[in-house]
Structure formats: structure tokens, C-alpha cells
Image (tube, rainbow, N blue to C red; front, top):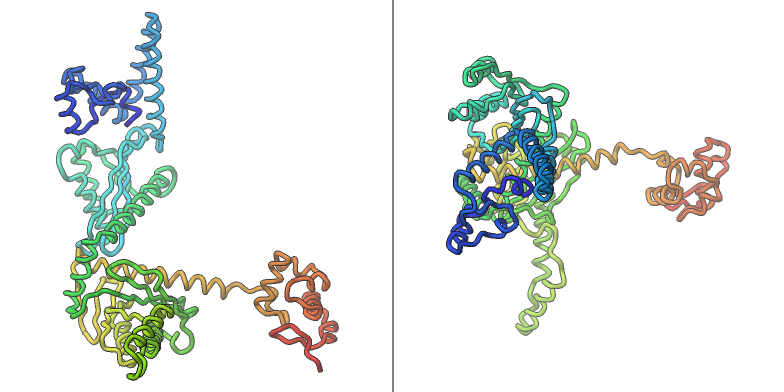
Length: 525
């Protein structure tokens, strides 16, 4: 815009700046540096300014070459009349126009006119992005977020989207391109294509690009949609009014007698029952409190299924809460009645300031579990077994975003546009992200098997010392006993054991003295 204003100096100031310039009879700074034709002080007539604005729009609409050719002819004429100052100014204008024109890169063939649509959606909302390609260049871009008030599939959503974009006023019909590229084939594709062709007065090809430049451009548009939805959710989560409304709606919908100052959400993650883990995320006043997030490893009988794992995790979390609560009560107990009141207050103050808050000392007002009726009942049973009655439990099922309460045969259905449902969904998604991250870390460690694991007497700390010293397992294998003994924590006997292990010399191994598996020291026999 700044570059084009030197060639097409249309007014770009606000109404207030325009009125002040008209009242004072002096243009603003842009008028003095020739980036505004200054209609405020009558330098150009309304008709001349209108022509400038139309030329500006025509250039942005793709007619750049016409203006560049026109300016080149004027520059040649200025040179012919020896008006070198005007010729230099026209040369700079041509350079500016080419700079803007080249920045709008060619993405498709020169004869391609297409609208490229892409979506990124979740259970409640979908971000829409569309690139308008004319003459092979991107001439415009639009984006917006729609709420999924109905349980529609992606093809249905694409069909409704095209109807909304092209079914409006007559101007949209004139802008209909020859091609409409969509992420998936819309519902009723044949009828929709015929309808679009009727609006345009010529054939319209609605299709899904599979490969080539058009598929690459579709990928870019899809990334834009993904980022737009993330930005929308971030702004929505940071809105204080929306957070307060969400907490209030949730409290009223669940008929809870307490304000939801602290919410904890639990999710279980595993792959076919292996490496079972769980996560606990915390939200206070509608905002995540990551310092209170916790991770759980689930083993034994508790890893049998999701309900057993959920019962185990809730039991462990609130058992810790009861223990921390009991420890804090004992630590903050006042001295005997014989002690002066000042000493008692000082003792309590010393206890509070000296001891940091325990990890599980604060109970939530609401526990949210990722799952339906079985998971909710398992969580409620865990709290009941511990005698905790002032913590409420709900579950959020993924399929239809249903909210389940303990002991209820039917879920609570929140409106799709509810801020409370959006808050529950955001907490659930964060718990799932935290759990799956921990699960991947644990699974990655389980799949990592070192060649040093089988060396007798070589524990984890000494394996790390060897790898740090030699850089790799290959370096350890190539080292001599003396070189191994030079590493931190590796004695001569353990060095000989490592050499014998990798050489496969059973005789040497049998001749070695017994080695302590924990310390690597020789055991006297």
C-alpha cells in the first residue's frame, strides 16, 4: 500500500484528519511528500480523485501490465522532450509497480481462474479460508470461523459453504471463476455444480486437487485455516468476559452449588493396554495453571482397562490430597493453651512461610474426566471410597460432546454455541495433549535398548558415563580395558568385564572375579 501510494496517491487518512485539513487549508504530511493527491485542499477535483481510485483498484485487480506499459511510454516521451526530472520520477514509479507486481507470485498457470477453499474444524467450530486466484496469481484472500450448530459431516459443510459464498448478491455471481477447488467433494456435487454453472452462465468445475501445484496451494490454504482456528481459540480463551460466562453457564447447567474456581481434568492414554499413562491438567478462573499439571504411570491390574486406570489415578490423586491436608493440619496446629497467644501466632506464621505448599494440597471444585458414563462412574466411585463428598465429577464424551454425571442414565446436552461447552472441550483437549505427550515419551524410552544393557555390573549411571566419555556405543566397544578404566566410575575389574562381554570370550568371563551388580566392585570370595 505504501509503495502504491506514490503511483496512485489516493486519500488514505481518517475522516478526522480530512476535516482538520479542510478547516486549516493545509494538507497532512502525506500531501507534502506526494503520497496523497490532497483533495482536502482542492489539489485535484473529485472526478480526478475518482479516476485515481479506479486506477488503483484496476491495478490491484490484475491489470498491472497496462499501467506499467503506459508509464514506460510517458517516460520515453519525457526523455524525448529532455524533461529528465519527470522521466526519473516515472522510472521510480515503474520500479515501484514492478516490485509490487512481482511480490504477488505466480502460483498457477497464467490462464487459471479459481477459488481455493480449505477447512480446519473441531467438534464445535470450523475455520474457513479461501484464496482467489485470477490469471494464475493470488488476487485476494478471505477467512472466517463458523459455528457448527448441526452435527454435519465435512462434505455437508463444504456444500453449505459454497451455497453461502456464491448464493448471495449478484456481484458474487459475476466473480464466479471457472474452477472451485475444495478439500473434499461436497454433498450433492452434481446438483451443486449445475447450480453454480447456472449462476455464472458457463461451466464451473468443482473438484478436489490430488497432485501438482493446485494440491500444493490447497495445502497452504489449509495451513492458513489451521492457524486461523488456533488464533480464534486463543483470543476466545483470553477473553475475561467469555471465561466468566463459561464458568457461570457450566455451573448453572450442572446445577452445582459452588463456583468453579478450580477445575481438574484427567485423561488416560495407551496403545492396546501398553505403557498406560494418565494426565491431570488444572484450570483456575478459566485459565490453565501449568505448574499444577501432573503425570501418572499406571501399572498392574489398574492398567487392565480405562475405567480401572481412571479409578486408580483418581484414588492416588485424592489420597495425596488427604495426606497433604493432614500434614498441613498437624504442622499448623497451635501450641498448648499455656503458651501465650503471640507465640502461637508466631509459630503458625513460621510454619506457613517456611513450608512450601504441598503438590496436591488444593482440591478442585470440579473433576472432568475424558469419557462417558463408565469413566464418570469409576471416578465417582474412587472419590466415594476415600470419603470425599465436596468434589463434583462430570465426563465429556468425544462422539457427541455429551456431558455425563455420575449415576445418570442420560447425558446433559449443552448448546453447541455454549461458552461452558467450549471451556470443557478446551480442558479435555489440553488433558489429552498432555497425556499423549507423556505416553510418547514413555513409549520411546521403552523402545530404546542399548547394547550396554547386558553388561554385568554396569548400571544406568555408569552407562551414561561411558557414553559421555566415548561418545557412542561403537566407541565403547573399540576401547581397551585401560581406556575404559579412565572413564568416570569405571574400575579395572568392570573395564575387563566390558571388554570380555563385547569380545564374547567366555573363558575370560569365567576367569573374572565376581562383580557387584550395583557398584561394579569385586566381591571377595
